Structure formats: C-alpha cells, structure tokens
Image 1 (tube, rainbow, N blue to C red):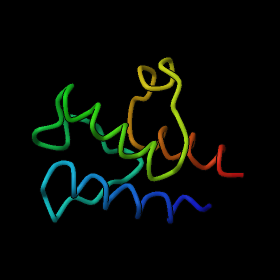
Image 2: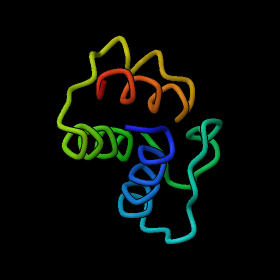
Image 3: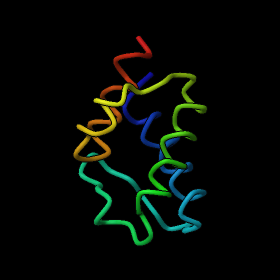
Length: 80
C-alpha cells in the first residue's frame, strides 16, 4: 500500500470523525491543525483507522506519534 493511498483513506476518516469536508491530511498534520481534535476524538480516530486498515496500534506507538506522517509510516510498514 502506498503512502498516497493511505493518506487518501486517512483524509476520508478525518473528514468523517471531525465532520469537516475540507480537511486534507498531510505528513505534517497534527492535532493543533484540526479544530476539535481532542483526546476523545483522538480515540475515535485511532479506532476508525485500526478498523479501516485491519490492524492495531501499540500504546507506545499511539503516544509517540507526533504527526499524521508517523501514523502513515506505521500503516505502510505493516501493509507490506
């Protein structure tokens, strides 16, 4: 799975979770870039991402992610 495919799927998930049709995620996107991204929506987003990509993040991965790019990297590595 390519980074572009993962990014496109994440964009759809983010638009759904944050109810904002103009969100476009990039490698540099962080919680500070999206209004309403708090701890509760973070958990919902992680759950949706895990469901979409049929995988589970480790807790240390979740807490270590500094931006969406790091999430994309993990997803791509596991999809090999």
